[in-house]
Image (cartoon, rainbow, N blue to C red; front, side, top):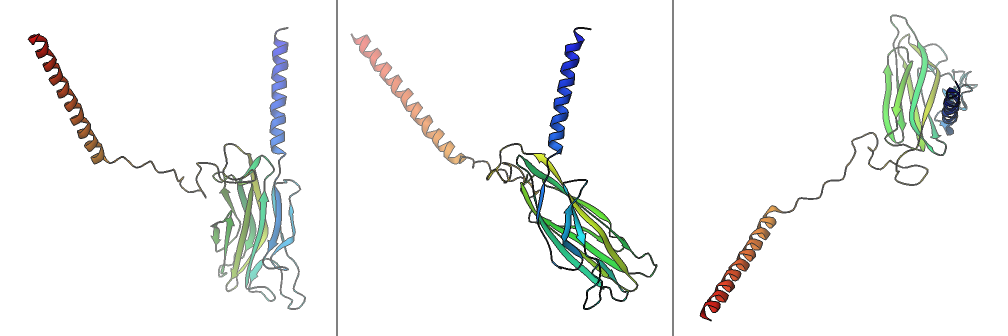
Length: 261
């Protein structure tokens, strides 16, 4: 029993240190900045976009409500054929995600939820796309409920800061009705590891794929010209044979002089 106590104590200490390290890693949070939208007062609302109280690495996008005081048309992110609604609703929200020192943004997850008419004759369509770190991609296209989720993996880039823009477009045909009710993005962090090109605030890992593509490994040095090698071999062979012949001749003369004497 006495020998077990130190072991137990060491195990408890090691476990406590491990948990402390995990807690420290989980406490790291990104910074969301420069939040803007392309249609102020309608659809997305950059002014009311805010970090989630439950997850500091999640940005919840604000959505406008109410009606335009001049036209009385709805400001909601909704496309409909009803009176005082928009037949088409489209907006872009942009922002920058920055990792804390010693970490990089490993992935981003975008989630949007919405509703759509379930009437048999209803026609409505939509499209969501985003550009992350300069790389555009279609998140999804839908003819009904616009709820979807998409993830972009940034481990190949290991960026310390990522510019992002998200565009959502809705269109309502005859008796159609489609709306976005919530949208958010969640960032995942990973500690920086390995050598990075550029400064301490960013860059691309040395030897890593660029933009998720195939790694551009340096080309091997060109092979030496085989004809040149063969030529050098012949020249060297002739020199060696000449030296051998001279050796034999000199040996014969030396022998002859020895016999004469």
